[in-house]
Length: 354
Image (cartoon, rainbow, N blue to C red; front, side, top):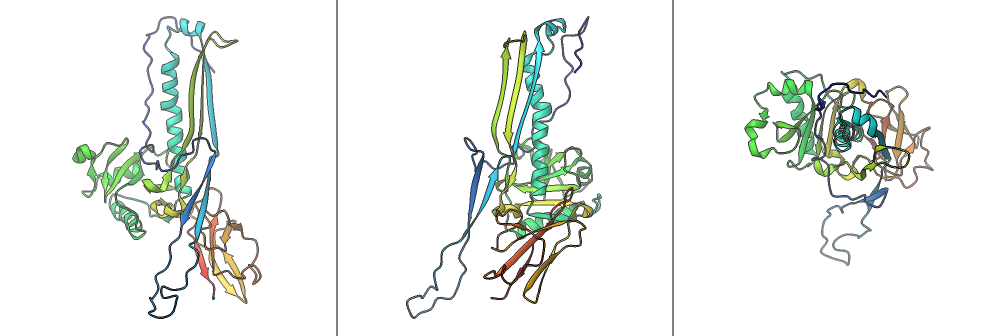
């Protein structure tokens, strides 16, 4: 790493541009990872409605245990940085580095952008709705985004709390539409960082093109559906530690990003068609169930307990037709396709005869 000693330079440092976090105000605060590496989230199912019978001892129907599903959320990211500001070099550079200022610069220019990019990528990959979207233009972008809000509406996602992350290029198209409400028109209603306006009830956050996951045109999330948990954010400045005359700066970050399975339809990723795996087909033939997709070299995952295989701990990798023995007592088979550098398909399912 180069160290440039000053002979006659200004004591003012020419700071680079930095952006405040674009995702911090969006993530759910409902779950706490303090003191643990992972948590288990329970989703409790509901009971179906039936007819009331005015005779007998089971007039409400036959009661059964209320079922539930679990999702294990385990943090996988443990990041760190460190650097030294030598007292002699700093003195000969007119003390332009400054440990406190340099640490703030590290957080603003490295840590915060990294967190935003990681979260956007994780949310897009784990979205409950990953849909192929046509190439946007100023003529069609509003209609395409309306398809996003329609999908959220049909999934009963609350209207309050929705945010649309869109690339700067596609934002340029959106801004030309009369349906787009700019930030200056919203005034005090828009306070979150990075919000540039509103479209169809969603706050719009403009994202640098290099930050958006490859192949994603935009990403809509509901605040209750996404987590951007940071278990540990520890930053230290050690003055004259053993063996160093100067400051040793260290930082550590344990974090991860998740989509809650029970609310996964509140996360919608509009992606390029070539980046999306094809929905698998499930076929029953002679008592065996076969699962197939037209995406070359894609892997297929399935569940037999009715859970969503994209988030389920019980999912299995498909390798051969499922036999009657494997399917004994199974009422539904669910499956999706996955491939490296592509986005997961939607979930296909086959309801078996009772």
